[in-house]
Length: 189
Image (cartoon, rainbow, N blue to C red; front, side, top):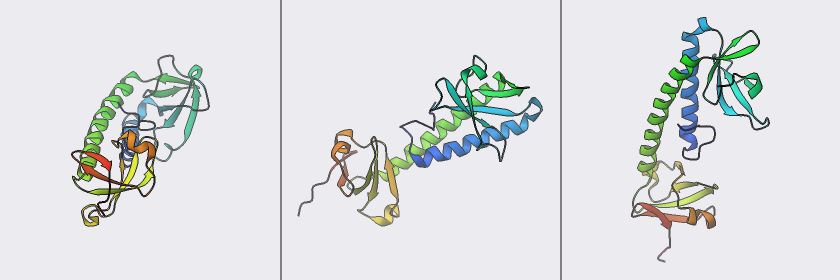
């Protein structure tokens, strides 16, 4: 399953959508199981703490609060994607909730990746010329300059841009989508 916090195969538009939907799933499940106690979700590794994790409180209005916890503070089996509850000052793993949430997030992940694929395919138009607005280390941001009405001038984050073109490409460079791939555009003037 894709981790929306650090996966390179998802574009920003759909990463953000996935994060919002994940939050809704977590908060809804926490609300339904409130009788089991406050729910926490391990959503990422902590970048400042070796063997540490970032947790969120699964409750509307509190999910933005980041809790940093070391592996020693957590149950031995806890990992990214685990659902925890608190018992006094200790976290306990909620196996049932972890399994249920994992299933829902797997389905969400699959649905959003399909939606992203359809979106990107709709923006890759044979014979259209694209201007690079930004060169990321592993992706390009492009504007379709052939027919603004077809895309409404929307910038597209392209994750399947040829790496060899990306290496030397700069803002303002032009590319053509030809035979199912981006190629350097050479004007015939």
